Length: 195
Image (cartoon, helix red, strand yellow):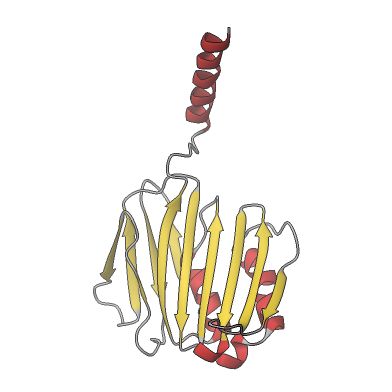
């Protein structure tokens, strides 16, 4: 479906073949560039980010024209939250929690669910009457963005989507040696100040 190759930079390629109605696509995030991949079908997009850094990637999906019956199904939301961590090679800490919420004044009825993973969390919010879904996948480790997006699009039959990708914790040092030097420097500073 898609892949992420990791190095100093990475590319997330999302193959929406067969192309979704209204063409899905990736929205530009900080440090990223949106391009239509040359020589590929209209539904194929590539986002190139200049550098992978910080605590980890946060993929946000806004899905439109989704299957309303699937968005209204709490068991499907629970199943997606239960299986997606395994699909993404992440570790569930707790089983998914899913709650239907009734329409209130000025608010739409829907379903909210979350699963806590060792790497962070995955959250889903559905709005069946509006055929809209909002998904957040935040992880402290890299994951296959295309696979995650494809899984969600397929399961909820999303007709059109926008994605946003940001690096969280941009100053978080993943380099163990760098982290050691930072901690040693902080200890040195505290010793000098406290005595």
